[in-house]
Image (cartoon, rainbow over all chains, first blue to last red; front, side, top):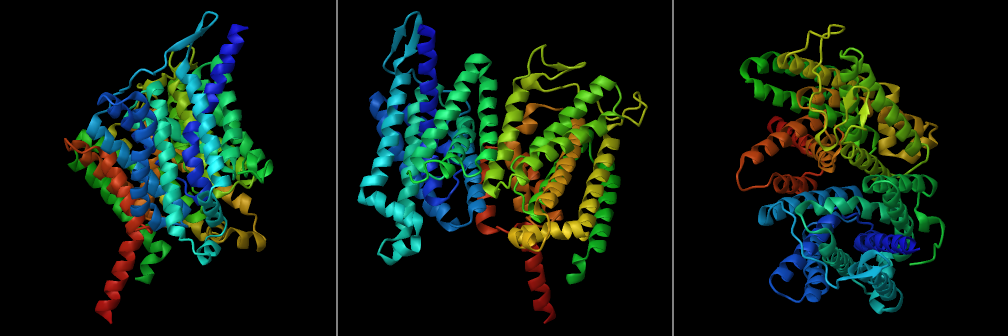
Length: 288
Length: 332
């Protein structure tokens, strides 16, 4: 019984991690049709922000929750201005340019901080179920995933900014005719996506440790989750994370972590063959 | 300038360059540099295979390295088991062919669109990467060959003369063989593009729907081109295995990225471009590796971004355009 509860909690935290690392990519891809292959490096930058801030003696919650999204969001704004803006509408070129950015960031951070894993222990301690120890921080991640998804959904659904963003996404010329500057909307959206990625990096930093190449561990998973999810940002990410996170965690328990990940990738490929437009391309099409 | 574009002259020029390289380089380069040159040639072949698939059929395959690695691994495993590379080479070409055929069937007949195709090919490569990395230990052996996990198969046997296992090729001969392979693949690609099949492939790149409405089976042509690219990448893998050894890095994300950089820098839509791009970028990376303070990834990434922003059509087409302008100006 205890074991079942522990496995269930692990599955929940696996799903939550996928949601957290995918959400920033989902916003940028869903709104702007821009595939940001430097997403993993945005996570990595967020992680470094958290580590450096924590090392400088700043309160752990500020360095995990506040600083990474702000700093990486600003960085995203710069990247949008210098790189992404010049390539709108050229999907493949954007993908390739952000891949270049990803390599450059890995190289740059490697030069600055060296190729070593640094980290700090997760706050909040642990709790026990029967004879099993569980990290409270894992549960905090589940909470964070719920809050984040809900916030993104609420902003898009209820606020004027969300309305403008959705309108621009549907028809940018019509939005422009109504007095909205699509350029600014795109810049703000990309910065928001980058901020979400930075926050994700900060959140996972205490769990995984931070290393310049950590982005490559997450980019494929995030990418696949978003594509499997399909057109709707929040619903798609949640359903795809739910499915893939369960597959990978159960696979990990039954076999090895590597085969768990392989299972995730195989399920994603089969799913894309059956539903080429992703889960929300077929089901729940009206959702956000 | 227009007549230079004709197939015959291009093939002749490529042959002359290849013969010169195969004859001169073994005489002037030291052993280590020669092996490095062989690596470059095998990578150029990999670049050529992607250049063909991407540049002439519009299939952006992010996982061309999957076939590269599969070719290398099957060669090493078969060669260790047979003790002779005569049978290993056909097997190492067959495995990527079959996998490319299956994967291509799955994607093209499922009508998966370009971005999703990129994701799927990348995913397959990552699956292979993760799998190859996890094969450490005694339970992971195929016949006599231990897969070796993270370390790969260090004792990859070198090619030998057909049916003479004790007559292994020396590095000089391997280099000449690699150049011959590259040249043959280039010529094959050039000739195929002259056939009806090749022309339809180009039509698909230009406008897939129109090609389909004109009655061509887009799926079959794409599959054919994809498999051809897979075989060439597999051959590149065999050559690579001969001068380095096979390891999971052949499947890694950074290799997968580099191939795309080579083609992009050289020029999508040309065959010589990817080869030139590969050699230039690899020389740059090798040079950057000798600099004490600069990380090679940083340099590569910056080159990549600049290439997309400044010369999106690639160096070779840009140079050709510039040259044509110059000739016109001086002539007129």
